[in-house]
Each structure stands twice: as C-alpha cells, then as structure tokens.
Length: 241
Picture 1 (cartoon, rainbow, N blue to C red):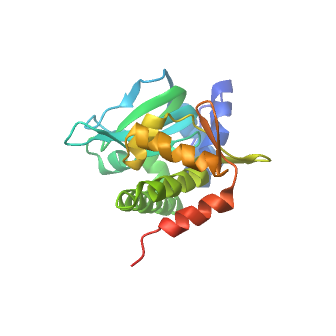
Picture 2 (cartoon, rainbow, N blue to C red):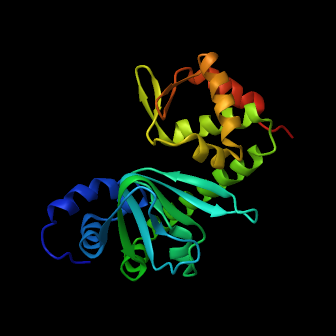
C-alpha cells in the first residue's frame, strides 16, 4: 500500500496515538496510508461526534480530550456505556457491521477525533489478518466490561461504586506518587449514569470513600489514594455464584 509522500505535522502527531491500539500492528506504509486518507476533526464540550442510528461508514480514534458512549433508556435516562480516552478506538461495531451507530458518542471536553473510512481501512485489515484478530479481542474485552457493568447494577450502592471506580482506575487511571489519577474529568452525574445511580447517591458514596482514605477529590477529578483498599472493597462486592 503506497503512501502519498511525507506525513504532515498533524499526521505525525496523530501517528503515535494510532500505535496504541490494534492499528499499531499494521506495517508502517499501511498505517501512513491511512493517516493520509483519514480526517481529523475538532469538537467542543457537549457536541456529539455521532448519534445512535447515524450511518456508520468509519472507525474513529480519539486523539485528544475525552468522550462518553451513551444510550437513552426507555425511561429517557442516559446510560453511559464507556468512557473513551486518547488512543482508543470507538465506533467499531457499526463500522464493521455496516448498520447504524449502536450508541451516541458525546464529547466531555474539547477533543480531537481521527476518522478512517471503512473503504480505506478494510483493504489494510484484510491484507494483515492478525489485525482483525486484535479487533476481535478488543471487542470481546469491551463486551466483557459491559457485562460486568450491568452485573454490578444488582449490587448494593457501596459495592457498585467500589467496583466501578476500580474498573475506571484500570481503564482511565494514570499512576503517580500520590495515587491513581483518573485521566478524564467525569462529573458525579455522568459517573452516576455509568454506575446506574442517582447523583446524590454517588456523592454520598464518594464521601464515604473519601472519609475512609480510599480516594481524594481534587475539584472534579478523583484520585485513588488507597488502591489496595479499593480493591478489597471491590472484591468483597463481587457477585458470587
């Protein structure tokens, strides 16, 4: 697969982000060709990258910022399925299946999104089938996480919050000397929509974890200060068969 000459500065900036996911398994020339053909777009906080049911002819990678994948329940309640951080792909199901988007992608903070049309991406993937295997593994992991998320909704509030935070710490966390910092600034309402709890209940449970010395709250950002303590609470709340 031939490229179209040297990469432009913004494409050079994007390239390391694509390397963080299954696209990083592609040969350099194939990856550079996708960089030339793809499109970078910028979005402001609250904007929708796409809505559920929209045509899905492209796969996307978050380059900067953060977003959430959501659906609306039959009771008009937002359900957060996943938070997305830079370097992660999203929109795989609709893009591979060819039907409409299965969820909405909403921006949490000013973000950049790189999109690749499937007519450009599929030839590269079929030429390198090991990348297709990586996509399957990635989707299986997301299904597993989604199953755990809905399983957690059968738990008491304290266990639901502990397991949710533990999951987010591994997904969104950046380890520093003073604890694990969640990379995204997620409001308590959005966290509640992820955990299936009202904002007031989330606030109450976070307060208890804070008093127990398990977390620290810096403005709108959560820091896990006692990872082992949170792990014990999450494990104790795990459903047992």
